[in-house]
Image (cartoon, rainbow, N blue to C red; front, top):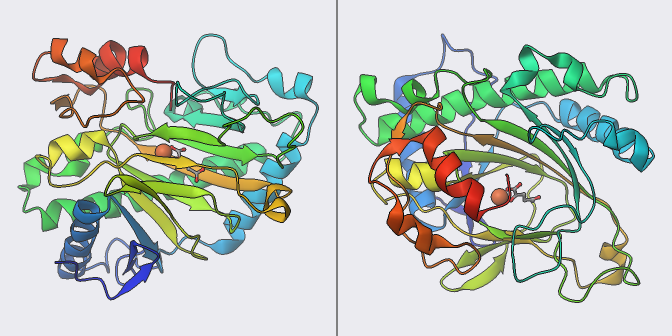
Length: 332
Ligand SMILES: O=C(O)CCC(=O)C(=O)O
Ligand SMILES: [Fe+2]
């Protein structure tokens, strides 16, 4: 039974005011973390997604991030491509350069990926062509990590995990190069029907592979989640962060928490097609050396899940990413 009283469409809404970042580490109460955790788990096990309101992330920071990303993505392609890395997934990725859903044309989006290596190598950020990018993105990543720690505490307590098995113990190394957690700044340009291939999506259907994703989206819409065999709209909710569980949390929770497929479609209305869509996704992953079971096969035609059968029952998260995800999915 879902305890949440409020919903946005089918997405339960959890009020995090007693646990959000406005409350200091010293003041936050275990009981409040536990109660919120119970609501999160209810939502994750029913729909896989939940909106978190009163989370303490400052809306003026989000506006600054939006301004700086608008400035960056509006630069000439050749300038942005100076920040595309050939060796890693860090940096700029151009329009139609990725494909999360093999049956569809390439994803109609641009993005900039920032992982934990940035704290040692801030020169990987495009500060010279986009002043302000560096400080803002580092600040934003730090805030996302802090909120993630609270959320993982809430979930661990509500799951009755022992202190030594808590989710935060598996995410000790957030913001380092031995944890693959990542901030992806997504920029979905206005859709030009003349160049769009039939069947195009802004982001192909996929499941997230880590523990929990914090998604900040504007009010344009287009995100859909698979629910009871159908794709259902996720209506934007102002000032709320959308959380969704990934495959790693599905495994760690013994299958209780659902990692649901989702996608971003091109809006039907022409007025909406002419809008730019912004979203920022912070993907929290377990540390590289955390032992994890491969997710149970979820009948997912978008990836080659059959290859899961060849995997051992338990391996490190890093091995899982290298042996399976990198062969079956586009990088997150
Ligand atoms: O842009 C969005 O709203 C969804 C992004 C997403 O699902 C992802 O980045 O994994
Ligand atoms: Fe996703």
